[in-house]
Every structure is written in C-alpha cells, then in structure tokens.
Length: 145
Image (cartoon, rainbow, N blue to C red):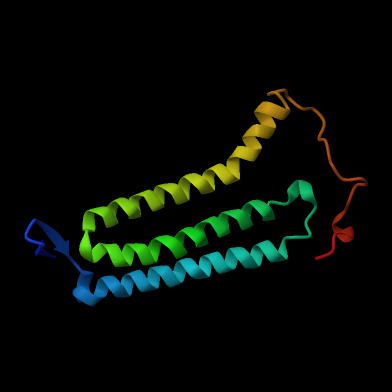
C-alpha cells in the first residue's frame, strides 16, 4: 500500500492488492460480475417458482428485492466511479449509504409482511389451525411447473 497525496489536502491509501494498481480494478470487476450472476440466478429462480401455491410463494418478494438491488447497482456504481477520483470522501459516503440502503431495504421487503401478518392481522394469537386461501387442497401431483 502506498500513501498518495490527493489535491494537496490529504493522503489516500492507494492499494491494488498483490498486483498493485490494476488489481483493485480487476477485483472490482470480478466482484461485480459475480454479483450480476447471483442476481441472474435469483431471476431464474423467480421465474421457475412462479406457479407455486400462493401461501408458499415468495417470488414477488424475491423479484422486488432483485429489482431493488439491480437498480441501486445501476445507479450507484457509475456515480461512484466518477466521484472517487475527484472526492474520495464523498465516494466513501455514497458507497456506505448504498450498502446500508441495500441491506435495510432487502430486510424490510422480506420480513415486514411476515411481521405485519403475525402482529397486526393475527394479533399475536396462537393459531391452532392453518388458514389457507386456496379453494381446494392441492397435492404435489396437481401443481404444474
């Protein structure tokens, strides 16, 4: 790691790992491609699981979470790449806020509907019988994929 003076005001740690300066760009590229493959895998799972009965189906939640992360990545990554050379502190704040937003929004999207169901709709009662929204009981053979 090297300490490089930035704009005569402060020092910035310039590290690229074992391969020096291009290593950071290479690692970021590999990390971004890996994230894209994970999001693509989530899209495939959402499409394949769309015909599951509604009471077991979390495809909408998964799709909204994937959309949220993909949109955030499409907006934040280009802005970060442009800002990091001119003002590293603002770039750090942007990156930190993006990570906090991504995790918080995903957690809210996944767990708030269940929490509302337990605390608001069921009023924290111990439900003895499972209530279904399906008209007729379904079996594994009747569900088509």
